Length: 265
Image 1 (cartoon, rainbow, N blue to C red):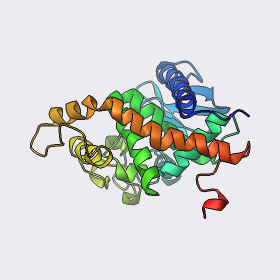
Image 2: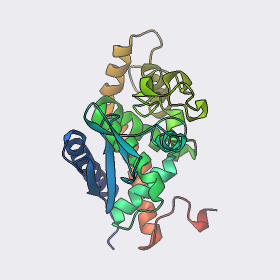
Image 3: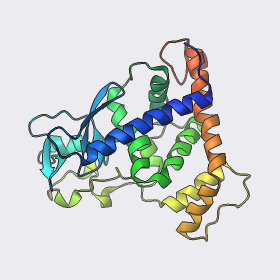
Image 4: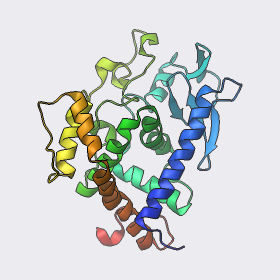
C-alpha cells in the first residue's frame, strides 16, 4: 500500500469519526424495533438511547430494557451492572496506545484488533465530542501528549469527568449496587474540573505560547484561552499522533501496525 501522510491519516480518522457520529445520532433517536442498531467499521453496535452510549452488547434476553420509551441496558442483575461498567464507571479502559492501534487499522483498512476495546475508543473519540464538542480537541491533545511521553495510563483516569464517568440513570440503581463498579457520581475517582485541566494541559503542550494559563480566571476564561490556541493544538496532535501514525504504517510494511515495533524494544 502507499504510505499515507500525517494529513491523510488525520483525514481518514476524521471521516471515520464523522461516520460513527452520524450513525450514532440517527440510532439515538430511532424508536423503531432495532432502530438503535447500526454497522460501522465492519462491526455491529447498539446504542443505549437513554444513556447516550455506544455499546457492543448483543440483544440477548434480559440485557436490554426500556426507559421512557428508549432502549437502554438493563441493570437488574449483577452481571448487567458489570456489563454497564465496561462503558461507564470503573471498567472503562482506553490507553493512548489502544486508540493509536485502532486508528492505524482504520487508516490501513485492516480488520480492527481488540474488538472489546473499540466501543470505549469510539465513546471517547466520537461520542464524547458529539455530545460535548468543546471537549473534542482536548481529548485528542491528551492522547497525543500521552503518546509523546510514553504514558500508558488509562485516558479516562487522566481526563476530567466525562459523559461516561458514571451512570446517567444512577437514580434508578438499587441501593445494593456494587460500589466497585463506580456507577454513581460520588464514586467517580477523577473529580478535577475541566477548566483546571485545560490550563495544565495547555502549559504542558504549548509552554511558550502567549497568553499564559492563569489560575485566577473564570471557567469561561479557561475555555476561551484554550480555544484561542486551537490551530497550534491541532498541529500538536498532527505532529505527535498522526505523524507518528504515518511513520508506524510505513514501518509496518503492510502488516498490522505496532506502536513499539520489535526494533524499538
